Length: 483
Image (cartoon, rainbow, N blue to C red; front, side, top):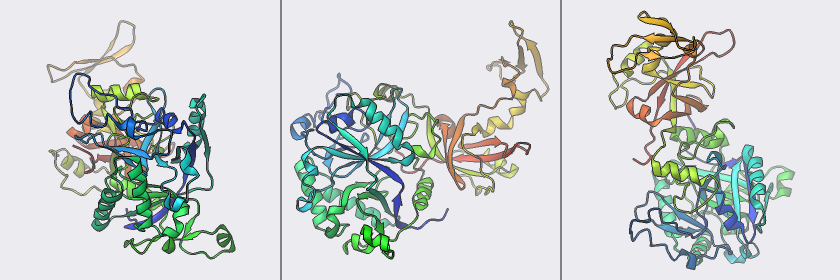
């Protein structure tokens, strides 16, 4: 899959403003990330210096002010919580703990350089960035939970979201240095001063356009993956039409300062999507609306969009119970679809935990979404379950329902499988396809199955009356996932 190694893309996202004296408390009750300085001790019977390090957060943070956002990492053994003006990745869940949408949350405004946003700094304000298809459901949920909270929200059509990335090692190191220097504050005052300094020193943007940048965030779902920003004017490569001149679009080469040494050119949004698929970064809008996914299945813990001790929020009970009981049995895995050949199946069966020696045979026809996936080993002996092998006896159960007894060579295995005639030809599979982009995609698969044998297959009929097609599926564990 070919896409530019660097570029700036405009994202087709909806931006919802949330503002008011109760905005922080209101959003804290809906998001999986922490916004209030309440530290709920996870294990009351343990004593840990790290856990009590931030006991004075409530004295540092005034939640009725525009203090910024808290940044934390659930895998950090030192339990560090920073304060920054840069945005974070998060999710909204429903009351049953299912994912409504993933999102980016920006503090509004990002900075207050030369008091250009003094009015907005008077009260807490945030920007919620979601996929356009999910904006209506998010607004509905905000209205449903507003009650008597002193907060206002609306979708702002005049704002634009942009994403910049560069896949060079130099950019990766540069991002780490910038975050360490400007976005590692311990209190709101230093956080705002650092954001103002970030603008004043023109680390990325020309100070001429400080009044046009409302939100900024590093995409740390994958470490130093890129950065995002929100403007109130469009960014273009060249202003040629009279309409663009009237709208006062910003030219790319003017927006980015001379201190930013990396190439900047506009790329299509599809390049950002293809890059996500190549790196195995799933977003919930990739799947169908009725997918009914859970946050841990969507790898929210891996992308650092979850706080484990923030207290109550919508969907929190099931989420924390799942974490404490370690009951996450399946996840969304990045996969590669390939042509299933007898030679590759034979070679794959000798897989012993390493990489396959063969290159995956390219496939021309890719399966659609929402197709059941079968284990490659089990599917090779599927005829046993369809009454096509000798050694099976048809019986009638106590209710008169026909059952199948399969003779087993394993003395410890059950030899009776009660199945209705309809169930004999049903293939429920071990997982399902959620999305695809070329030969890459995302599938829900059992963790234990992937660790044991990462090859699977799926069967589907392209069109009615056509022959059934079999496609191979290889699950991949990205190197950025924690061990």
